[in-house]
Image (tube, rainbow, N blue to C red; front, side, top):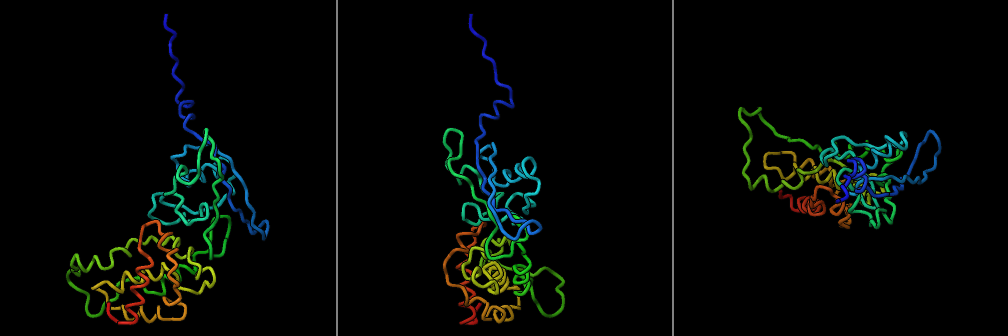
Length: 258
């Protein structure tokens, strides 16, 4: 008589897919200490989950004081940019299995999580974004036109749109700016994200404010501070050719053709 096969309960079957991962998170709470420190959290999680899911699990079940930003969780809002294993990434787009080796159900290396560099840390993984957004506002990231308000939409050819299409993808996550060694050294530099958003309008055929934006970026803290290290392009989670856009703005400043 055949021995009946007993199926595993759904919860147990699901647990077979979990691996043990250590998250080493840089912590900072100004109300407790002026010093930062690292804290390890060991959790069981599906390796196909994202780093953001792991941070949620830690906050909800291990330590409710862990502080980080997130909103849409789908790589659109840019809120959860952080340094993961030494590289700027969006936590909601980074899969655990892609950033740590796993053997026999255990991650063999801890995953390091810390705030993005070059900005004042407010608490844990949250940084002060005000200077970043001020640089963004300074380049006038909106359409500038003259004359009367049109009675119909401003039409644009596919070729004209393609000229600046790449830089419309920016989600203001600050991954590019906070990966820039010039920005680390001097926070007065406008930074790649501001220049990318200036590019988006400078090369828009419907816009009339290109000269004004170029003069803003011609400042000592503007586009000429770029050293073409390509860190910004490597860090962009949207795949924008950031360094190329910066070079095009430099060329426009020299030739006044855009």
